[in-house]
Length: 351
Ligand SMILES: Cc1cc2nc3c(=O)[nH]c(=O)nc-3n(C[C@H](O)[C@H](O)[C@H](O)COP(=O)(O)O)c2cc1C
Ligand SMILES: CCCCCCC(=O)C(=O)O
Image (cartoon, rainbow, N blue to C red):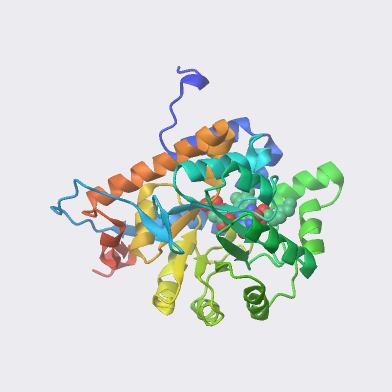
């Protein structure tokens, strides 16, 4: 039998399996877990399988590029790193490794409000990186303003405002761990004491009034909310259910995407995250109208494996798989990826 050190990791599932063997159980539970019965966590992945590819052939795909832009900035692929909290639990370099990997691979990196590295440390680690800051609006608006100013000073390119976490979803495994450790649910207490449940769309207007940074609203699942986001002048919408960690039972993001793209009709950029595990998932999301996809947990698995190098490996696997999926679908550039490349499985049962 091959020894552990000789095992070759050739897909994101391999990284996930490796992480599940090496991370302390309470860290694994926090990173991996979804809310309640984890229906949405599972469905984010399952839903991709219900969309089938309809490849074109004989399109001369010998020269290919995945390059595109996000908020006007060049990126090497339509792939970004979603904000995930407390990355130093995976590896001592934590968010610094992630920011460096994103920079060296030419991708957007989104730093979480709840990070184990500071905004200034990220700016020092990846000064020329395409760094965006994910903002939780705190009850204390002065603390919120201070975070925005620090992100501006550190040359962050955008604010990603997460709107699906006015209270923390119940991640049962984490709750059990916290209860047996300290007798109370510390993460729930943290969120309910700091984050502001009174948020409304007026707070997006307020945020726009205090900064020139473009605003991305993260956590939209309905076309009418997407319409409001456009009306309030956001630069982009991230279709997200927080990786199934907030309201369990909501639809998979890939299923929510088409109606939102239709509603937005090009008036701002639309991104999607949740359940991306392979290149064909990215191809399907782009075909359904996303400009970019973001990935959360797989980056943590790469980080846990070997810090910056592990994340670079995960990114390169996704890029290699997307490149192959594009070639086998007759696409040389991301602009060749169109709606006709995917059909929902329901299409076949109606034939
Ligand atoms: C461990 C973990 C921590 C997260 N922390 C944050 C966070 O601090 N802010 C935020 O907006 N989203 C956070 N998210 C949600 C991610 O940004 C993203 O929406 C989700 O992970 C996408 O799903 P995926 O993990 O299947 O790619 C977190 C997700 C995970 C798994
Ligand atoms: C320990 C508090 C976690 C705050 C929220 C981070 C997050 O968005 C997530 O875990 O999901």
